[in-house]
Image (cartoon, rainbow, N blue to C red; front, side, top):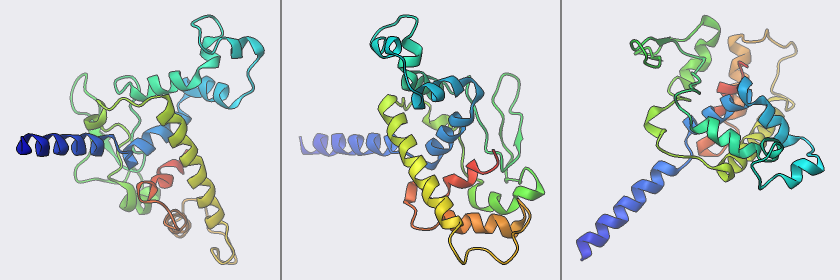
Length: 203
């Protein structure tokens, strides 16, 4: 009986560990924010609904899509076959016919400009197939996106703090400029959000 109890506890702990939000999940959500086919859902999420759309929130009628944007965003997020963003910092190679591209190993920066950032975030994988069995719901999308917005705001504040810049701003994407962003993302940042902002910068 005790052994079974320990086994059940270990399984629950493993299940919870898998469900925890990772940097790959964060990167995937940020890509979802920039995904063209998801734009109308983000617009609906942050827009002002009409009375008909509000009334359609619990229906499947003509207005229901605008009234339930988180449902559609979660559906796209969970579709690893049709929505497969890549880490733009590194190079990918074809894995074969009808297979998704995979990262080149050992990793190589996608261009000279991204080499500095690739050193910090080459291991981020927004289409991590090992996590495709974890189904994210509307509440997760909403809560995690709110966290992302909060940490993005903190990062930009830190980036623009007095003393962060030299007298002259370096060219965008220069190594010195990218180092400033790295410092900004590391400032008082929660562990799971440690470097997710760096993946967002190229867009």
